[in-house]
Length: 282
Length: 340
Ligand SMILES: Cc1cc2nc3c(=O)[nH]c(=O)nc-3n(C[C@H](O)[C@H](O)[C@H](O)COP(=O)(O)OP(=O)(O)OC[C@H]3O[C@@H](n4cnc5c(N)ncnc54)[C@H](O)[C@@H]3O)c2cc1C
Ligand code: SF4
Ligand code: SF4
Ligand code: FES
Image 1 (cartoon, rainbow over the protein chains, first blue to last red):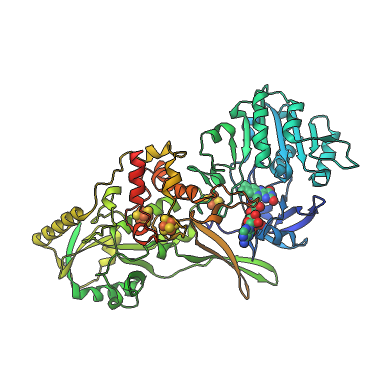
Image 2 (spheres, helix red, strand yellow):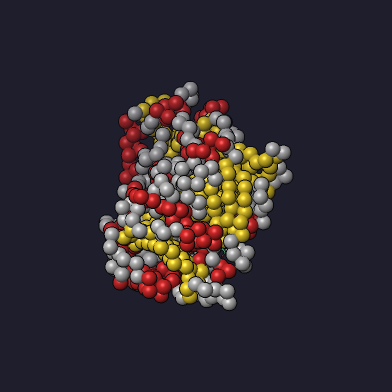
């Protein structure tokens, strides 16, 4: 009998650093390192892929990889506390051990983005894998292979903006056009105010030789797509990442399908054109 | 192909010989119905009962199974896979519809880059002794979905009940190995074979065959938004019985349970008929009502799976028809789809 490897077996990893991202303190970024040094060195992934994260005793859940493949030796996951597993993870301390399976899913289509202007539109904490992609593009080894980079990112209020350290860093660079907005500012806020679709319209990134990736709450996506279309982006040049409930991550537990596509295998990234060909069940 | 005959009274001894070399699972009398269970002796097996309440799925893809043990020790965490380095297995007395159910399960669990190891490990060491179905029930419709009460798909040895004896058709090498060293068999005569042939014809005749099914998958492709879905689910109470009993429903959940030494990671049956199945962390549910859930189950069997694997994911075993508490009948749903 041929022996096959167990796809349900996670690799053990240690939480090296835990960073609180927002004022409400329900979003944290976990920097993790595989216990097996060979795996820590050899683990490869594409921005937009995800891992199945275990807190043993609480269970497993899918989380997008927030670090960039250019970050060597560690991974990052930015996690919002919503239920059993995410709460258990939030209760962890640095040094605690978790399990990771993956990387799963298709990720952002890097090759299709090369040589083109890239527009990233993110709202709320769903910004995680766009952050991975932005960091990847901005890395010295890769920057030359992409055209202009525009990042439009928004949160409900200034306290909810995540990755403030990256945003500050990106502000200083001249090879990225960063636009940050909040739905509603506070007394100290000097930046933009307004919902993403409005800001997007105002910023009007050119669709010429451009490809866009959008991540955020369903309502933001729903109102952003018509704006993108108006700007001239064709359905095949608008990328979206779907979030479904997932248990296995490998196309077996049967719960993440949209029509005959499994979001965990065939997605989570789809073009708007692909989604138009699928049942509206996401 | 070899064809033998064994007297019915010799069957317990035949199973006993198998038990010397295999773990044998056979139908046993579980009160009002039969259930496939491991037997310690041939006399426990009961082949005269109707097809077990649950299909062979419950042996190879059990309702709950430990897929991983995590030990919390001094030096941290260690993961350990449960391994069953025991004898090979035999499922004895499996009806052709359920053997076909396993063939469909194989396609799914062995597909893609990630093979389902917990299932494949068990399946790889399992041989199937089938039992031809002489008396299909009113709820059976295997012949309408590409099967047959005397079907041989997925079967290593097929038994045919001839009244006082069984005809034994050895179909594969695995079957040959199983039967090696089993005494009390004699060669089947032309008359034996003619009798088996006649039973097969009679069983076919007893089956419902008027179910329209031609072009069902293609038709469903364009029917996601059809108003039909607003009605067909209305009496369903979402109990999930249809899926739990169905040989081709494989959805599962994975949960952790703490033990004194660590954690057991367990997988258990789940179903698209439950509300929570697709409920997301944000509170959004892409299948919020019975409509979407019944549509999903129907689409999976008759549209999505056929599109991927070229065959319907229904064996016509009739379990979902027989056991539904509100008499939801998948055959009626098919007829409605075909008449749109
Ligand atoms: C590809 C992908 C990438 C993702 N990336 C990220 C990411 O980067 N960061 C991130 O934070 N999240 C991400 N998610 C979402 C994340 O997977 C979910 O938030 C996570 O699965 C929640 O798991 P949990 O065990 O904490 O919640 P669960 O306990 O499973 O709870 C889920 C929901 O069910 C509700 N619920 C729980 N128990 C009950 C009950 N008894 N009765 C009724 N309702 C109940 C909860 O309120 C919650 O809304 C991603 C999802 C996908 C599919
Ligand atoms: S067995 Fe009947 S009531 Fe229960 S979920 Fe299935 S169709 Fe609905
Ligand atoms: S859908 Fe019903 S008839 Fe078809 S295989 Fe499943 S339980 Fe049997
Ligand atoms: S998460 Fe299990 S099938 Fe996609």
